Amino acid sequence: MDKKILVIGAAGFVGAPVAKQLLADGFAVRALVRNADKARQLLGDKVEIVTGSFEDKAVLEKCLLGVSGVNISVPWQSEFQVARDVTEILARQGRKNVRVSYISGTTAVPENRGYVMIDEKLKAEDVLKSSGVDYTILRPSWFMDALALFVNDGRATVFGKQTQPYYFLSLADFARAVSKAHQTEAAANKTFVLNGPKSMLMTDALQQYCDVRHPGIKAASMPIWFGKMLAMMMRSAPMKDFVQMMAYFEKSPKVSQPNGAESILGAPSMIMSDWLKN
Image (tube, rainbow, N blue to C red; front, side, top):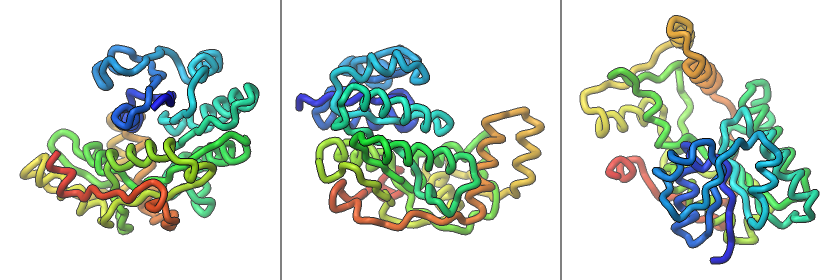
């Protein structure tokens, strides 16, 4: 395959699996990362690595030269800015057929406006849709791989009364969907909802994870106020952000409804028990 895809944030939680899948499917990959050594350890020597900041328009402009697609895998706080800058550069260059894939989220729907992460994701979606540049927006459910974030210091904790089930999705299945989005014209200018094969409550998913990866640890639920207190005592900004996110999900926000992604991108097939064997 003679197509080259720029993966912005290719050394990250989502970006690294996406970059690896693109390579496996025959794409050439250009990786924009902050830490070249980390990227080489994760991705190997077959990736073209560019070290720089995705906040730098000059760096983005250089990275966009010669690519046929772009994947945006950056922290949500920067997604709108990167989506805006990438599409503005491509439009200015007259390269509107360069496909931009973007990871949004299953609860990124207008009814959930008011939580800052969702507001930013909807802004990023809007800028892609109005840019005139080819795009594919992917709204995945919770990642199985994110369950590790709930386990710290020998404890597995879900904050808040998480009563809404989610179709947990493996990052491997998500990465395959991204790659497919760059292989087919049928994915152009569409928004896809990506659900895993089986819905589960967060506590049940976490317990299943612990039974295999951390035997003997029992998943517990703690109130949001307790999480906020812990974050304050620890003086931890990441902990504070995590608890705020869990407070959002405690309200059982509206989720995106399935919209036929499987017919174009393929059906996610990894169930939790199989994922835990890897």
